Length: 174
Picture: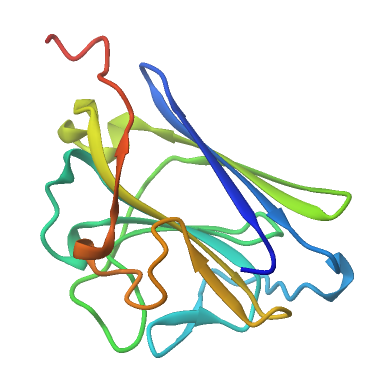
C-alpha cells in the first residue's frame, strides 16, 4: 500500500491493547462520516477512511458470524459486532457490547487509533495464547484497502486470518 499502516498489540490481565499508525500525506482530504455504519461494495469497505479489526480468540471461530469485528473511524466512531455487517451478508451479524475504549489522534502525516478491549468481552477463549486475527485499513484518497495478512480480497473469511501470539493470561489458572 502507498499509505503504510503499522499495528501494535499488547495484552495484560484485563485488556487487549491495539494501536494503529496510519500514514496519511493529505489529512485534509480524508473522508469521515459521523455514522455508525460502514458502506461495503463487493465485500470491501469503501467511501471513507477507517480501520477494522477481526479477532478470533483461541482460533475457534469457524464462520464469519463467530468473529469479533471492530471498526474505528478517524472521528472516533467505534462499531463493534459479532460477524461483519457487509452486503452481501456472510452469515449472522449481531451487535457486540465490546466495552472497548477508543482514542484517535492526528500527527504530522498520520492518524492514530488506540483501542483497549476488555478480555472479558471476548469470551473464555481469550485466555488462550494463540488467536487468529486481521487488521485492515481503507483509504478512499489512495483507493487502497490493505490488511496485515496481505490478502487482497475476502478479508472477512476466517480461513484468511493470520495467527497472532498474545501470550497466556496469567490469571487463567494454568
